[in-house]
Length: 69
Image (cartoon, rainbow, N blue to C red):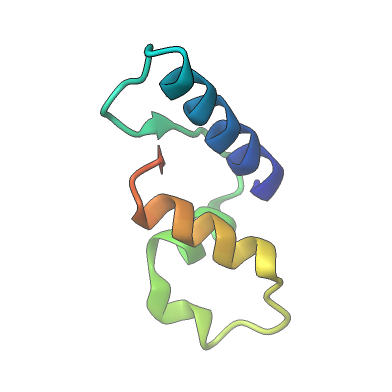
């Protein structure tokens, strides 16, 4: 999921450079229910163990409205 989010950020920046940007967040489809639940509900970050920096990146990208689930 973090690699896909990184690619989506790159594509969004490329679209902005080409003056083809869209103001809405890009939809991201994921079939991992636990990962999307952790990203959507930040209160559960404290109760999970071994969260890497990638998960925080996905959360940041979602809160800045670059991607949407």
